[in-house]
Length: 266
Picture (cartoon, rainbow, N blue to C red):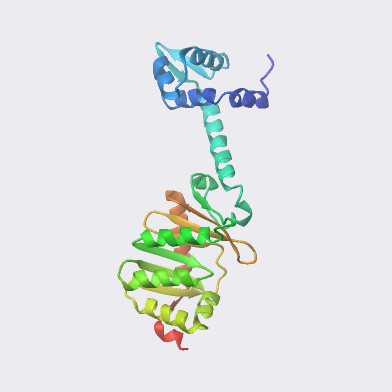
């Protein structure tokens, strides 16, 4: 008996998304024909052909009025679902992947498949920054890690922290803090932020691989190119991404040096 070619079997599934949906549904639990039709939303004639094709490959069998996936059917369903998730993640990240430090992000990139990706446009070149600021405006708490601390972000964090509306723990590269020290009004804003009971800032000399913000329910990454230009922002409510970002922040926080208002002598 000639063994089926794997690529031919992949093509068989790819030609009909409904085949994939039916097989995936039956891999989860046994279902009657009417239950399959309701879940996958296909007509009875189409469903009949699909069930016949899957049965011919011994991916599906029947037990009374119920259809269920066989062991090999479950194997195929798991593989095709995994591939589909990977392709969905790749499609979503394709336009920003060159700026995403994948080596530094210790989490399966499939967890970013449903992320909100914001890129600059010709008329709104600061869209990624605006997205970051919008998330901070809505947050009650924020853990910040970055190699930069721009004026807009500083003013927003300072205003909300002084008002008691935002608790923040920030780690910034020393070059970012040095840049603020050099300008009197920004130095004063930073001093006021540090004097607030709601904020604590620490300074690191280590290279920060990616700018990260962990707020109440979102994790936000700000992506820059090799010249430091902001190219995109990525934010998600995925739990795995959140745990990775919190761990990264904690790692830098533990080694960073606390910054106090007395350190900002002009």
